[in-house]
Length: 83
Image 1 (cartoon, one colour):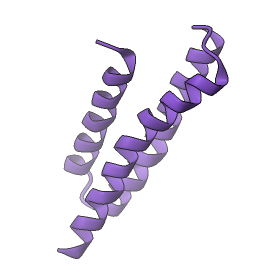
Image 2 (image 1 turned 90 degrees about the horizontal axis):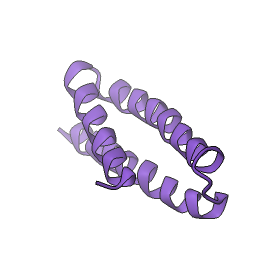
Image 3 (image 1 turned 120 degrees about the horizontal axis):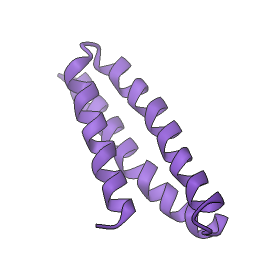
């Protein structure tokens, strides 16, 4: 399984765990975004510095890996605030 897919699954799992454990859904969303930014930037730097990928190609992957779970987190927060 490609590393990007594993990271997407990990991001979604982290989002689900935080949304279930933290009562304040807005706080859970911000905690997720902060943690996921740190984790995804870590994988970006590992890809560039250790795996030998270029900054340009790794940034495209990072935008996807960070962006999809972040967009889902923000969408879930918006939908839960309407209730």
